[in-house]
Length: 106
Image (cartoon, rainbow, N blue to C red):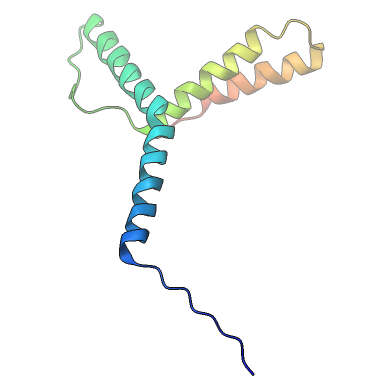
């Protein structure tokens, strides 16, 4: 005798699950989107102060560039404020900061 079971999922249940996942992802990426808008405003303001015209103020920087700027800030914090660590670890953190600064994001 063969035991087989079939699970039937309706389209309503599937679409509800997909919608729930999309809402959760939007909620989790919201801080990154805030940073993206903030960095875009900062970059456009810096361009204006230097006499340059921003190419398109409505065009935000990419998520990849936003995460790279965040990575730079975290590396700087660890390199600059690592006061109770060993000299070797401090040098590694400074090297990490320099490496992040030299990395080009397209």
